[in-house]
Image (cartoon, rainbow, N blue to C red; front, side, top):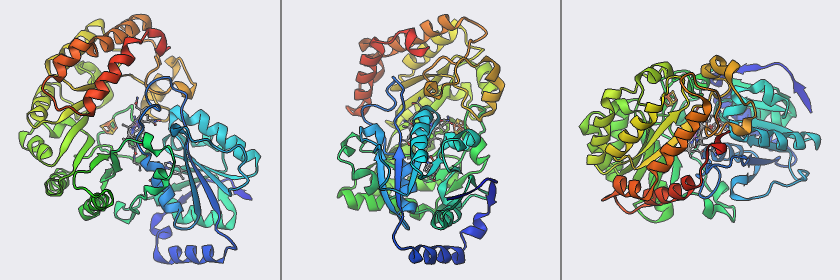
Length: 469
Ligand code: B12
Ligand code: SF4
């Protein structure tokens, strides 16, 4: 296997052209046998409820499997389901692993083992993209960003046995050219019952907001792409037929689904006709308009995930999250609730501007506004982001296992770490006490959001500040 050390910038305009696609297929047809790829979703070490219980289907690795499967044989292992990764990789030619920061150490362990056995190892996903030099030590090649944009080049090199150290596209491929994800790769596992029944789906990619703690602006810039509506709707219809009912639950994996209001509103109108249910991440700046929330409710939306992040205006300023205006928070919540849309509200702590009062303010906001599913995390500077560079001298851990947003990463300026953590734990226990759940959830439909509250009640009752060290 020859390794070319230099990073090559590949233009998808060149590589995705029909002629290079044809050449690729000719090259594959000339091979004596189809090469065998093992695709792996590694489990993380986190003690929190991120990788246990019901987990969502990994759309990223499913999309990788779908494109790889057009030319190669694919075996798919999701270690989070309890499926075992073989010790001996002799049955495979290529070991391809996806990784975020919280499971990077495990991805690297697998990569090192496969390299020792002489395999071609490919690492992709957020963490190898952000730290491609580090990731290169544990693999043959790193894929920067999405596989679709460098596929022709990567596949050609695998077929020729000449790999480059990093594959990075000069330009991103249009989303309309992306394959419809084939879920059979994930669903073929005997343990697939552990997957959430919500079907992951992608309509748009990217986010122009540019928060300094988020990896999306670094990887994709302020670029915002979307799939043609017909493709998204066809995919929904396909699943309705596959499952044999109209009322299918979809979970959009988009960074921020509402950025093109016209596109988003048309998508909502069409979903209303299909009769599906859906949830998504969304920016709140669009939801202060009652007509948007009304249409979202009518289109089958049952939950929206909103990053409130903080109730402190100074903190919001430091995050560069221009889409959040504190003065709109209550209006947004009320618009959604009027239309029976539950809210998964993300709140972060550990910022320099946080004071003991911040915890009380957040508690009051959640209880007054009856936020159904509050999620609390500690601010985590992810490697490769501007925030990481800014905070590096103060960061307490460089052990990637602790980058699950549930570890205390640096001492805030306005209180000791101990004080911050004791308040953080207290807030969670208070919000998830039986009485508080009843107060927030009274009259809400009996669905999985209740179950999530019940699970959080059990989980938070055992919490101590030590969990977060
Ligand atoms: C939807 C989402 C979720 C969903 C679903 C996650 C899932 N099962 O996939 C939920 C809500 C469950 C979730 C949970 C969490 N998430 Co999240 N999530 C996202 C989000 C918005 C989109 C991810 C996605 O599916 N995109 C669509 C897919 C198709 O695109 P993609 O991931 O870019 O995949 C392409 C490429 O990366 C590449 N690729 C990926 N893997 C591989 C492998 C190989 C071999 C190759 C060649 C290519 C390749 O090709 C893929 C196809 O195009 C991202 C932001 C983002 N844009 O990445 C954050 C993001 C991934 N999440 C993040 C975090 C922190 C979390 C949590 C820790 C939060 C928490 N405290 O609970 C957990 C961790 C869960 C876990 N076990 O990994 C961070 C991770 C940061 C980091 N450096 O690791 C991100 C990047 C957001 C951020 N803050 O910057 N998340
Ligand atoms: S709004 Fe969300 S997706 Fe967009 S940059 Fe901020 S954190 Fe990232």
